[in-house]
Image: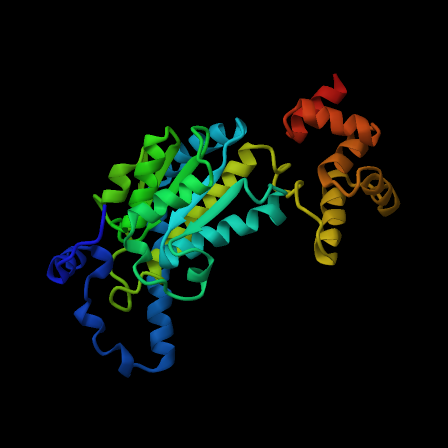
Length: 311
C-alpha cells in the first residue's frame, strides 16, 4: 500500500475515520478554564479501558499465539509510524530490564528509524517498501511475530510490515483504533480498539495512543507471564542493572521465600544475582548449579523447576 497522490483522496479517507472526526460541541474548549479542560480530558480518558475491555477475547487469542511462537525461539516485533511506532519502541525497550529478555527478542520498528523517535521523518510512514526493508534487515523468520500498530489502521508502513511478514509465514497482528481497518484485515489477528473522536481533532496521541499503550502492555506482559518470566506477580527475571533494581531483586527474593536477609544475600551471591535461581536455591534447598540445571530443564518456569526439585 502506498500513499495516494491526490490530496483530496487522502482528505476524504481521513474524514471517514472515527479517530479524525470533528466534535462541534468542543469548539469552544480553548475558552474554558484550565480545570474545566482537565476534567474533560480526564472524562475522555476514562472511556478507554472500556473500549479495550470489549476486545479482550481478541487480545487474549493474539497473546496465546505470540507466546507459542516465542516459546519456540521467536521474536516479538512491533512496527508503526509516529506515536504508534514510538509506543512500540517504548514497550520493546522496557522488556530487557523487566523480564531479562535479550535486546533482539522484543524489537520496536518505527518508520524512519531512531531519528523518528524525536522528530518527524518526511514520508516514512507512507512507505510500505521501507517496512519490508526494515523487516528484511532483521532476517524475519516464520517463528517471529509482527505487530502492526496504527491508530488510523491505514498507515502504509504498518500495513506493509504486516503484509510482508504474513508472506514470510510469520504470525501477524494488527492493532488499530478504527473499525474495519485495512491493517486488521491484513493481519491474522485483528484488534480494533474504537475509542471515538479525540478531544483535539485528529490528535491520536490522546485516547488512541492510550488504548494502544494498554494493549501493548498486555501483549508483552502476559506473553512474558506465559513464558515463565514471573512467579505469581513477582518479576523474577528482572535484570539487576542498577542500585534500585538490585534492591528490588533482594525484595523479590524475600517476598517469594520469606527468608532472612543473610540467607537472601548468600543465595544471590551463589547464583550471580539471578533472582529466579536464588529463589529456587532457597525454596528447594539446592545449590546454584543445580538450580540453573532445574530451570534449564523446565524452560525457565520456576514453578515447574520447584515441582521437579521436590519429586
